[in-house]
Length: 354
Ligand SMILES: Cc1cc2nc3c(=O)[nH]c(=O)nc-3n(C[C@H](O)[C@H](O)[C@H](O)COP(=O)(O)OP(=O)(O)OC[C@H]3O[C@@H](n4cnc5c(N)ncnc54)[C@H](O)[C@@H]3O)c2cc1C
Image 1 (cartoon, rainbow, N blue to C red):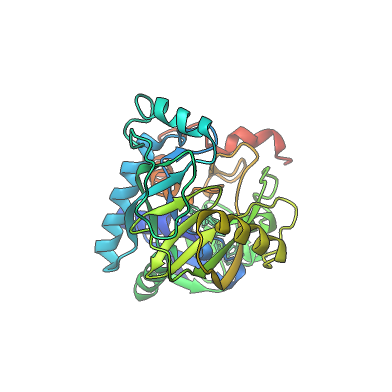
Image 2 (cartoon, helix red, strand yellow):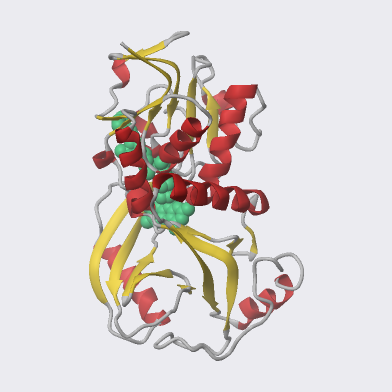
C-alpha cells in the first residue's frame, strides 16, 4: 500500500494546476488520469481575455484572477523548465458603429486598464479586412499553450512517481477517514474530471451544462497579425508563421467529441469575414467544456464525505480561473478557510439525494 496526502483524478488543466500547487505547498499527490478519455484541455486555445465582448464588461473577478494566473504560470515555466505563456493584445474588429461607441465610453473609465482608449481606422496587418467602424485593442490578454503545459506537467509528475495512467474505476474507491483506491491510501481525494463528472457517482447530481466546442488549425500564409490575436465573432490565434488556431463553436445538444461539417462551415464563414486570403484547414478538433448552469466553478467537499472534493466547472475560462481557485481550495483544506459561496459546491446541496 502506498500512502499519499491527495489522490487527484484527472490531469487536464484543472488537475494539473491543482497538483502543481499542492506539491508546491508540500503535499504528496498521486494523479490518476487517462488522457484519451477527454480532449477539452488538449484542444483549448488557452486564451485569456480580461473583458467579455458581449456587453463589454470586465470578465468576472479579473482583477484578482489575472495577477494570480500570471504568477502561477510564470512560476510553473521556471519549475518545469518549459515555455507555455505568451502575453498578447487582442485586436477587436468592430462590426457596427454601436460597438465602437461603447468601446470609447468603457475604455475611458470602467475598463481603462484593459482597453486601448482609441478607435483606430487604419490597420497595418496584411490581409486583415478593414470595416467601416474601425478596430481597437484589448490589453493584458494572451494565451497558454495548454498542450505544452499539460505535457510538461505530465513529465514532472511521472518523474516524481506521482502519475498513474489508467481509467479511474469509481467502484474500487473505498470512502472513509482514510480513502483507499486499489493499492493507494490517501487522506483526501479530489476529482478534477472535467465534463466526465457525469460518470462520477459521487458528484453526478450537480447541474452541469456542458458545451461542445470545435476549433480549426489553419494555414493562412499571406496573413500577418503580428503577435496579436484577432477577434471578430471568432478568434484567430497565431501559432507560428502562417499558422493559426481558429474558433470556437458552442453546441449544447451534440455532446459527442466528434468533429462536424456544420462547425467547419460556421468557422470558415467567420474567417472569411476577418481575412481576405487563402485558408487551408490542417486540422479540426472537438472537446466538451465542463460548464455549469450558473456559469461558475464548482469547488468543495462532498455533502457526505468531507475528505472527498470536486475541483471542476471551469467552463470556457479554465486558464484564468484554475490557478486562483486551486489556491482557494488549498486554503480551505489546510487552514479551514471558507470557500466563497459563489463557487462552493454546497450551493447545489438541494440537488443532492442522500
Ligand atoms: C474548443 C474549446 C476552446 C477552448 N478555449 C479556451 C480558451 O481559449 N481559454 C480558456 O481559458 N479555456 C478554453 N476552453 C475551456 C477549457 O478547455 C476548460 O476550461 C478546461 O480545459 C477544463 O479543464 P478540466 O481539467 O476541468 O477538464 P478536462 O480537460 O476535461 O480534463 C479532465 C481530465 O480528467 C480525465 N478523466 C476524467 N475521468 C477520468 C477517469 N474516470 N479516469 C481517468 N481519467 C479521467 C480526462 O481524461 C482528462 O484528462 C476551451 C474549450 C474548448 C472545448
